[in-house]
Amino acid sequence: MLCILGLSLALPARSQKEDYNWVLGDLISTDSLFQMAIMNFNHDPVSIEYVPKSVGMDMVTSSLSDSSGRLVCFSNGTHIFNSEFEIIENGNDLQPSQWYPSGFFSTQGMTLLPVGQRKYLLVDGKLMHFKGSNGLWSSGFSPATFSMINFEESAPYGRVEVKKEAIYNDTVNFHGTAAVRHANGRDWWVISQKMESNKYSIIYLNDVYPKQHTLQSIGDSLPPGWDHSVFSPDGKWYARYSWWGWSGAGCSSLYLYNFDRCSGELSNFRSYRLKDDGPGGVAISPNSRYLYVSNWDTIFQYDLYAQDIFATETVVAGYDGFRGEDGWPVRFFTPQLAPDGRIYICVPNVSSRYLHYIEHPDSAGLACKVVQHGIKLPVYNSNTLPNLPYFRLYEEKGSPCDTIWKGEREDYAGILLHPNPGGASVNLRIPGDGLEREGQLNMYSTIGSLVLNMPLPAKTTDNSINTNALGIGLYFYEVVVNGKRVSRGKWIKNQN
Image: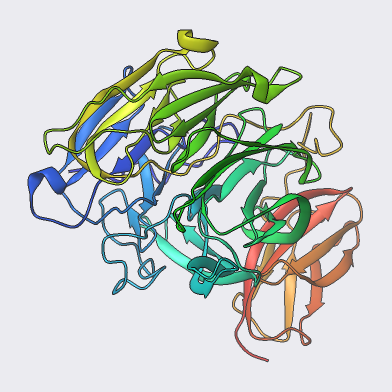
């Protein structure tokens, strides 16, 4: 039985083990081959642990561990589970469970991110269906949403405090959502592609709330398709693989952009149509030099250091014809870079007990060593690898966004907005002698809009705040001194 010990420990600023447990599985079943497995990267080589439980997995998954590498929570797109594989409080029906009882069918349809000590955000959306310009039905998210998950002492087994709050209403592809850490080393960028356009939705996640959302137009317009995207470990590249083949005339394309982690802007658009056609995905080597495309029967490598990147295309593996015990072919689907430096690749179209991996992805050409069906799982896995950012990327030193505290830091840990919940007037209590210099209070709605801003005088311990103009609901606040956030929290208005 897995346990949930250690969740009361605070996550340090330099935690690097958030991706140390990958939860895999298939449809809900009592059959032992359709239970669950965990790839545990606390061991070298990775250990595969059988879990005699079945919650349902159908392609989409994301999981998070704590600073010591213990599993905290995971989601199959339909529900959020804790390390006991139990649905956490208010963590049910992210998507309608009557439609997706065994998990949500999507590649990268959501992502889980740490945003504080024992607090996490899940970013996904409300599923909707529409007829595309090609006359075929497609699916997307509208609106995009977030849920805030708490594993503090008051909720050791997990509780969703904010559920499916809208971030924006543009319809985005429900495949291909990727995240990267902001250049300040704390916050996150999350990018999705707006349906049937060349626009990208870029969300700035600041601590525990979406602070801003922008749409950037760049490059070619993408038709509805099956997409997979990734940021490089150094955060400077954004790659997107897109396949559309529903009409019988398939097409697989690769899109490359540079990314500014400070401004959240894409630039230097490049595109390339692959010779082979089929669903697949992208991954980038730990040294951020080599881009890999897994494409049904073929794995390609590209050198991102080259002046003409696409001219460096090298076939590093072709499907060897291997079939599982059930007779189904074990081809190449979506890849994911792991903490052990390998890139693991799952199998498309069918449930499979096998994974491929790239042993030395930092090496050029065949020296990268693709090992086909090199991992045999104790259970069947439904086209699933977790959607995870690269967690070992922090502040970009010397950049305009490098606002990490250096040297001595003023300790305002006891700042408190009360009563909470409250009404038309609340008090901001600052311990000790108050702020050492003038600051300001910013309060935001759940969609990241600034709804209140007021100065905070120095040496004042009690600050009365008029919240009469705010509607009933949840708000997030921050205290800023000299341009740096020294405290943040959430406040609920429950009466006028």
